[in-house]
Length: 264
Image (cartoon, rainbow, N blue to C red; front, top):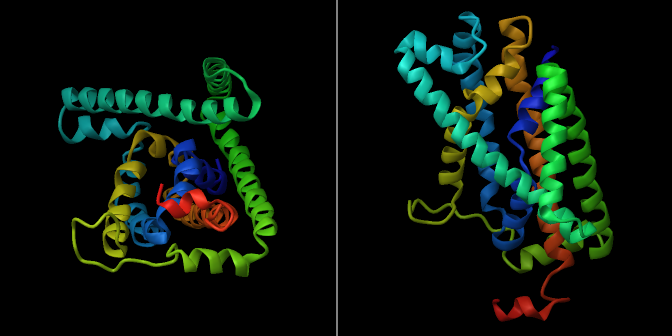
């Protein structure tokens, strides 16, 4: 595989419906303090690319858990693999539930029906297409997500009266304020999100989900490029998600909905 579709696939793999629904909601409810968590990829992904990727690529591994056996023992490999399987199962359950609830709200289709159909389709193309099928499906999903979020932004900006009005409303209601507090108990601050967000990328990009993707390219350099190119894709998609949250706040703000004025 070429490193560009692999980079898109890695990014989409960690962009679940939770992110698509949750990040705009965070902007809507609390403002822009979470943005540094995404910007932390500028230091975290280069570190992963030059420290971790050469290890997996040099050993010619197809599973990140093979390294556990080589470095420690077979028992630890099995334990870590089982933990990943349990975590992935719970994660996929929530990922299926999120869009199923959205589809039910829009189309009236029962949640269980959407979960069964979606799960069946995903299992089918993964089984028939293998890793190549998964990667190209992720590429298609990347453009679907990007186009959808851009459409939300464009329609929302028009309804709000323009970008200037969007930022005016958000600024007036404190949504553009960032906290530089050093208090570790603060909900969010620039320092905590910038450091914590970067640390959070490390287990993601050394998990089986990422390793099995950047091992599909031909060389170490391309594997490293696949990880590094994830950075602009992350910044573009997540930047649009953050902006959509501010746009939605400008459309559904207290001027039109006094309910929010009551602090409810």
